[in-house]
Image 1 (cartoon, rainbow, N blue to C red):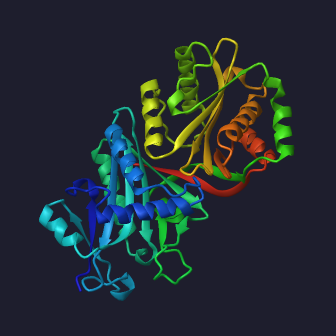
Image 2: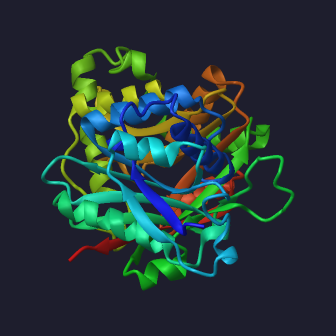
Image 3: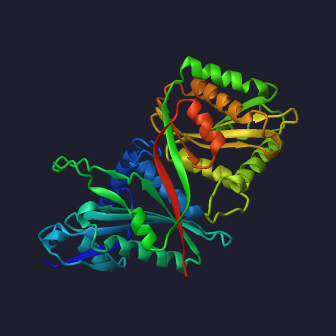
Length: 399
């Protein structure tokens, strides 16, 4: 048996599309992981929409999908325990004859990694996500994959790579009927301990909270009571097709005030010891982001409060997933000059009122908050949210 696994950058594969069997296998792993990880409550999305989203993202930034492949058992031991030898990693360079040779016979995807970064020169960050088959862990393949992508980041002129670490560690069970084990087949890598050994430092920890909908009457009454101080503010709500909102009179001025507050959130968001990109996002760029959500079959719903001059002083946004039964609240932002007026409670109250009016079929809402964002964590706890898991953001500065 030839003891070799193959490393493949799918951007180099000819005619790589959603009809390619390797793409289908990779997407199936990614979607299954997202369905089980508890972070985003993401539920089934179509392969077509995932492919469209990746293609669209690559136009505005760099998006790479890397695969580790093992040939069938007749050509390669099905698990490293059968060989007791660390497999040699051979990189596929994209030549058609080589690709045809490797991808024939339905090779098994044993590792998957995505790498993304902004092509803008001012951004120094790149983001890594890696998944490995459990039976192939512990022999250096995950480390090899991570180091390969780190070299890609350096070649792109970026200096910092970021990944997420989960507690408890995230794993999912392959739905293949031939798998009779209760043990998870795939695990995200690196683990917390492995990340530290590889030079990553944890800079921020977030708590992932979730609760079932609809809200109980006593919770609605609590929100109404807390929000009464902010009754003078105008309520706005919009999705992709109605941005900027027209209800507030001068829609251009309202959009500009929203972007000011959004960019403030980039600067004020609790980041711990993380390096962050603080350059401002333009209205055109934000529109592209909203297009990406729509392309993936998701809806990005916004609610806001505006003062008498039409200036937005608080907003929250929610990602509504396909099927519209689950959603994830992303940001809750209050303008610096309007803090201490109860607007945190008020925007939460308006958010849930709006969701009930427009997305009454929602069953689960989740949200992330920095572990030291005490005010919002207290509001979430009072509203009946409970902790599901914790996510640590870890970064490594590349020499």
